[in-house]
Length: 166
Image (spheres, rainbow, N blue to C red):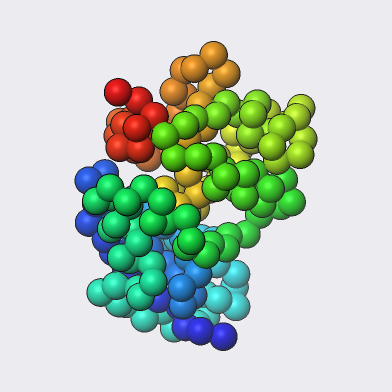
């Protein structure tokens, strides 16, 4: 089992806090390491977390994404705890094409439970791996942008960066 690594990355939407096990991202957020630790198991919390200036195979792909290679993040491996529907919703989010948006209803359908629109919204809210699992691409039915845990301004920036909005 590879070690836990932490790193920070400067980005146009703010400082990103990254936690990984080797090249598998366990958390990426804008709020800090304490929030990232909340998704670790008690056993993982006992492990040493090594600070790293960058995480090989991950950091450069995130930087490339912000520099315009919008597909660079697609190959990054991710893992976060969650129930079956959340896992299906997160996997479905990763299939939303860059430059497009889908509704919470679309996400619920793609995740295998068309009636679970609220659960789709909940999966977005629980997502601990921002940008890579692109919950910012999920909007309200009817086209309203909707909420974003890191601020609607950041959601708008990401959607404009990806060409989904002018």
